[in-house]
Amino acid sequence: MIGGVALAVSGTGAGSALAAGRTPGATGQGAVGPEPYVPVKVGAGGGPAGTDRVRVLKVGPNTATSVLVLVPGMFGAANDFRLLARDLVAAVPGLQVWAPDRREENLADRSGFAGPDPLAYYLDGHYRTQDPAASPFAAHWGLPLALADLRAVVRSAGRGGRRVVLGGHSWGATTAMAYAAWDFDGCPGYRDLAGLVAIDGGVLGAFDGTGDPVHDSPEEIRERLAAIDAGAVFDLTLSGVGLGSRPESTQIWYQLAGHYALHDPDGPSVLQPRLPDALRLPYTVTNAGQLGFFVDAGFGWPNAITVHSGHLADSGDVRGWVDAGITPIGRVAAAYAGPVPTVWEWYWPARLSVDLDVTDAYTDSALARSLGLRLHHAHRLDVPLYAFGTSQAKGTIEEAARRVVAGSRIPYAAYETDTGMNHLDPLFAAPAHNTLTRTLAEFLTGPGAR
Image 1 (cartoon, rainbow, N blue to C red):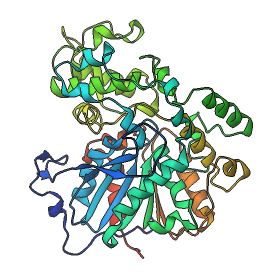
Image 2: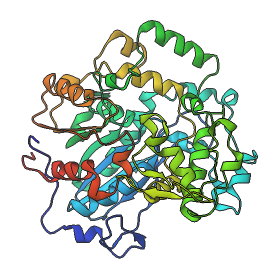
Image 3: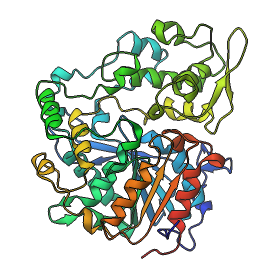
């Protein structure tokens, strides 16, 4: 590690973060304080009533003098960061962590999780869905709007002179890097910040090692924009999992799996009989086992949506889950179940995917300008950078971060890689086995702060 961004403040110890709240602490050291999920007003975006706001999950003491704002990645939502936030707040004196949802979270109907039968509400089609054909407004929900919303969050976090470090996971890291280089009516985004954190994502080829690099040739962009104009306003990437063809189908299945694994982990899976034949195991599993089947790397799911949790029991009339990895299934269940906030965003705008792909070049190109991307200040960045990579990108997270540093005024940086982790492990792994928690805490409390 080279340097760090010191956020520790004398007299504001970790004990203040472990106040008299009632939410169980992730570290086993007591309880954390209240974790509000509060609205932040943002500008008009042309969507339905109630969508001109974002909500922020806040973990840690209100007396904190520094705030780490973490942006979820593609299809990610605020609860991605609750467990990580608790662990960081316990480790870093004077820190609060904010996890914002994007405005499209307002389109999701989570009400069924408060009822007696979430499975029937969602799988039998009783929930309120957002029809892409009735959502032309989403064609304009790209990166400029997302960053305008994020700036409202960052400025709120910085009130009272608090230091703000901005980061994110996967495409959330790309979003954070875009914010730093963005021109907000003549004001560079990095001037709002004391540091940057890129967790398994970024720019300048960060995703090249994944086998699915960005698609940003002018020809590809023209084709994608034409599809959006024709009505394909929501990204359907997750439909490839095989759990349904609607934009929200896969996310609903995963949240249901988390719900039942949390509330009845050892009961026979209520989802298994409803699964498509191709995804149904040939033996009965518990609710925890069903969630494990969905999320554990041992079943062959893509690295981008898996963790190292364990395995199903070898025998039994109903096979349960055996924790044998760095990410216990109970932690995954607690995060996935939500219900509000949750881990999965239902309606990811296809235009945001286009803009983030083009952002990878991290320069004020003609293509970027044609999309309204104001990436004017990448070469002037002068705040510390922390970059963390997992096995997903095979080293290109660090390589890309080094390119960012070489092309800017960043004074010092920390680069960490744990190839024993998959893409989602850093968000949910047990603290004792989470390299991200330990090294990010070191960065946030390290020497060399301005």
